[in-house]
Amino acid sequence: MNRPPLPPAIEPAELAWHDGVPESKRFGDVYFSRNNGLEETRHVFLQHNQLPERFSEIPEGRSFVIAESGFGTGLNFLAAWQAWQRYAPAHAATLHFVSVERFPLTRDDLTRALALWPELKILADELLLSYPPLVRGVHRLVLDGGRVRLTLFFGDINDAWQSLDFHADAWFLDGFAPARNPDMWLETTLGQVRAYSKPGTTLATFTSVGQIRRALTEAGFCMEKTSGYGRKREMLKGILEAAGPVQPESPGTIAIIGAGIAGCTLARNLAERGHPVTLVDTHGPGAGASGNAQGALYVKLGVEFNDQTELALTSLTFAQRFYGHWRDQYWHPTGLLQLAHSPQEEDRQARFLQRNDYPRDILQPVNREQASALSGVPTQSGGLWFPDSGWLEPGNLCENLANHPLISTAFGVEVSGLVPCNGQWQISTDEGSSIAADRVVICSGHFSPRLIPVSGRFRLKAIRGQVTHLPAKALIPPKTVICGNRYLNPALGDIAVTGATFDLRDDNPAPTSVSHDENIRELSSMLPSVFNDEDGKPNGEDLGGRVAFRCTTHDYQPVAGPLFNGEDARLESLFLLTGLGSKGLTYAPLLAEYLADQLTGQPACLPANLVRRLETRRLYQNDMAVSY
Image (cartoon, rainbow, N blue to C red):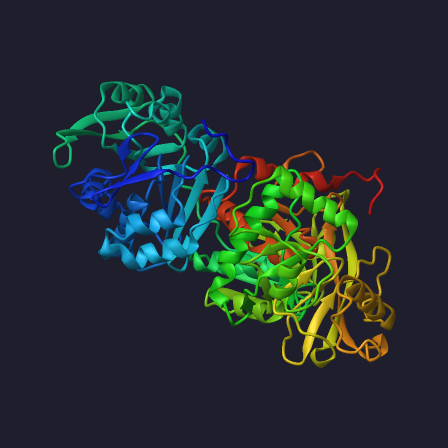
């Protein structure tokens, strides 16, 4: 028997193809009907969940949630997506589709399977473009301009139901036949269907096995047999009529304080879901730490695949998909090379590769010669190659993100405090004016603690970072981003940005020649041949650059979620998103997606273990504690 792969990889499905139809070798069953799988999906799942009628009734800004027990080829998802395009209202609304797959198809197999349905080609092509790498855990795909959100859990179904947070409006109980895949149909598994449902939730399944009907009836569903599709005489459908969770209330008016990459991505996310937002900032979009001319999209994945590493990896792959909308505009996916630039880093990368198994579309090891060829710069070592990473123009991107009809801006406003008043939050300004909002998100970096209306302190600190603008003509411009003890981006116009310093005890906001010289020295150590002329190496006094202050937490992990006071009670309708450190460009899209899920009451894009990792209460210190 084959041993399971090292984390985070997951075993793909092994297929046999008979007359063009895929069959699982493991379960000995087909993925869909040989007669007409698409029509079977429409009959079993769309018709018997009354989806066309229910889609048309979704209120503005709300969502409809479908949950599925086996993603397979994605045919059910594409059929639901097609119906959503046809029957959903014209106003802003979101279709959420939550699905689990223990043995996901490879991209090549998925491409071949979906080619059987030409009428779904446009949707299938978009799905394939965003299809995630085969690693365990949760993957959120944002499709159709944000009107469709697919949450894919690659792993065991019981792990999925313990990790995910959602309540379904309709269930597609799919998967291979109970006799061939009994684990999918265990009573404990079916009992979880009830836990993730609400009054009026419907379900449908192709099977009519009595044991399945009885288990669902015991779980609280009113079940009945009805006509199946094609040769299959009967199937099951049901509805939950018991009391339970209801549709969440509208989030009301939302204000976001801080227009860096975190605030701008969150504002755009909410606006695209149909929720008006007020974006407040002292200066304007991308004026703070997100305002550098260039920024690299990268993470340093841990040797051990733990929660911290999973969060970094999930953020990286989500960000790569998210920024694709701005490809060749503000997003430049040149690839990224993470050099083994020192003996310590070489040892770390060797242990990393020994203990983990990452798909090659995420990263792959390269030797010195390969690294030099990929980057276009002679390197002293090999490293890790991230083919789908690259660099961004953060300031320009923030301006674009903030430009949306549902985003109102209040720039040039200095916020002085937050006060609860008549069920809302009043945002006070130094000018004496105020902004009222039902919910407020603080995205103000290291200034955030000043705005949190709680006694005590929050363990956030500012770390100075200076980047240097190198004349492109003075160096061999790289074709890719190169990272090590410094990073170097490909040229943007007549400069290439390198940096950044890590100044723990320096609060000087102005660039200094000393920091420029430090950046040049460290870059030369990492890439000794990068400058065209050693004697003509730039002098710090002659260079431009920029200083920004990274906001980090005591454990160097970001925070996202509702705020709590010193008694561990939740502050109603007040949220925090900060502490992204030097990885803001990587973390911001995913954490904005997660916080938007929370604000709107929609299915969470993160599993429970990563939600715990982001909790804000870990930052709190009472007044007796020592503050950063």
